[in-house]
Length: 149
Image 1 (cartoon, rainbow, N blue to C red):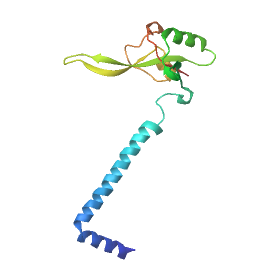
Image 2: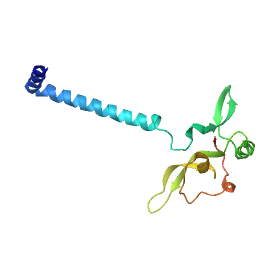
Image 3: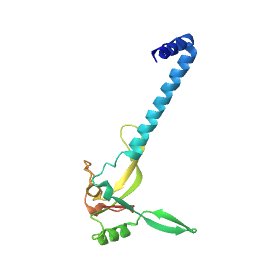
Image 4: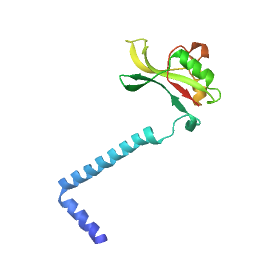
């Protein structure tokens, strides 16, 4: 075995072009594999950052349009009705909706993605929040998909 390793090292020293291409190919393959696995782990394999994530479900309304069903957000009255009626089925009921907001300051305004959530979103998901804008149920005004626990 030691003889074969010496022979391989001599062969690689004799052809430096091949050695460089082989080492770069291995480095690129290992780097790409590591990057892809890190991405898959972060997106698919790591558990959600919520307590009791196995108990969270998303509830949507469906609308039939042109023979096909579309998933839609609840209207605010429907959300309030579902939340009031879900006391026996779910421990909590919260809503969220994706939106974009304008960040203003010293420079030009910048459009950023945002999540609009109902007041009980953080307690339902089991996460802690530190946002000063969190308030009571009275400020829940927008239709959104419901998340229940």
